Length: 419
Image (tube, rainbow, N blue to C red; front, side, top):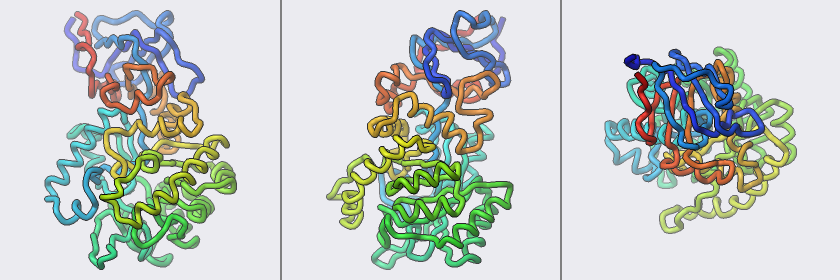
C-alpha cells in the first residue's frame, strides 16, 4: 500500500519523556493519527500494532521529548551584530530573509513553539501558521512599551535615535493605553512592557523603575479587555519585579533581582518567572562592549545566579526563555543547562521548557506533553538529557523535529515507508 500524504506517524525504539511525569519510559512507542494528534505514547509492550500505511521512524535508542518552548525570543534581531548596525546598515530585505533563517534555525534546534517579545511582526507568525515558511509556532508582542528614557528608548548617548519599530515610548496612563491599543491593533498576542531599566540600555540601570504603578495597571486592564490577553514585563531589578507582579502581569522576564518577597508574590498571583539565563551566563567581550554595559553585567552576574538559584529552590513557576537576539539564536536549549547549574533537576528543566512553558502561553491543553489527544509536536535527542542536559544545547544532537505529526527535521536514516 502506498503511503498517503498525511501526518500519521509512529516513532519507536526510544526512551520517552512526556513532559509531565516523574520518570522516563524506556523502550517506548509514540503514534499519531492523520490529524497529527497523539493516539498512543507509552511502553512498546502496550502499543498498538504497527500499521502498514503509517510512516515509521526508528529512534535508535534516543530520547523522545515534547516539542520544546522558548518563551522569550527576539527573532527579528540578529545576535551577531549590534542594534546600531541592524538599524542603519542592513537592507530591509536582508533583514526579512535573516529572520526567516533564524526561524528555521530555531526550529532545527528543537524549539517547536516560541514567544517573541519585541521585534517580530505578526506576518511571520501568520506565515509559519500558513506553512509558507518553517519555524516554531509563534506568539508575538510585536513591540515593547517603555517610558521616555526607559529601557526600550532607542535614543543613543550621542543623541542619535535608533527609531526602532519594536519600541513604543509612552508616558502617562493615557499614553500607555494608546500604546497598548496600537500593539493590539497590530495583531499582538500579548503586550510587553518595561517595569525596570536594563543591562543593554544606556540611560538606566536594572534597579531603576520604568513604568509607574498606574501605567502598569492601565496596560494590564487594556490587554485583559481585549480577549483576556496577558502582559509580560521586562523586570530585572527587585523594584521592577514587585511592581510588575503587583500590577497583574502574567510573566516576569529576566527577574535577576527577584528576592523572597518577589518569589512569594509570583506564587500568590499565579505568575511565572522567565529567567533568560542564556544571556546572563554568557560573558561579554570587553573590547567590543560599551563600558557602561560591561560594568552593569559584571555587577549583576553573581547576584543573578544567587537570586535565580533561590527562586528555583523555592519552586517558583519557571518557564524557559533565552533572550535570543541578545543571546545567540539556534542554541536555545543551552538555557536548560543554566537552570540545572543553579539547582534544577534535568527532568524539572525539561518540564520547565515543555508543560510549564505551555501553561504560561495558555496552550497546555494541546502542547507541552506527549499524551493522547495532544498535538504531535516532538523532538528526539540522540543522547540522554537526563544524564547530561547539555547535550540538548547542540542542534546536531537534535535528530528529529516534528510539528503536528509532520517531520520538519530528520537526521536519522530515512523514515521507513511501509508497503
